[in-house]
Length: 141
Image 1 (cartoon, helix red, strand yellow):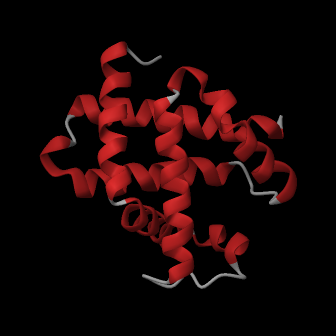
Image 2: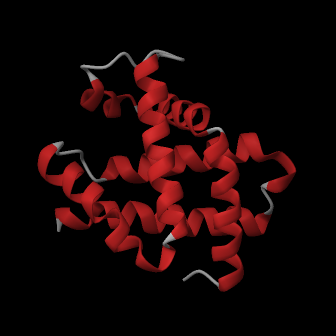
């Protein structure tokens, strides 16, 4: 799936992303809510307006979980198992939403990374985020 070079590149990218986790996470969530309005139903109890504290806080949690996953790519299933179980059994989030959010994260990174968003970085991020969405959906099978 991912080459050694891609894994190292991903760790580097996600370390940089972690520095702006709150902003990138909030922007990605807002993008998802704007482009895919049905995803808002799981957040009816939160203020999901632009720059709200709820949006920024949840966005940061998401990005930091992904950063943690990037450090343990070889054990992604194990690393993300608690989140997979939480979203499947307690929150009952529809698994399609993971793919939608991962796509919105990819678009957000493309907008923010500028010249660093090379074809190689794009491919590595896309592979990783696709794998992440699949891992988070595992408990639904």
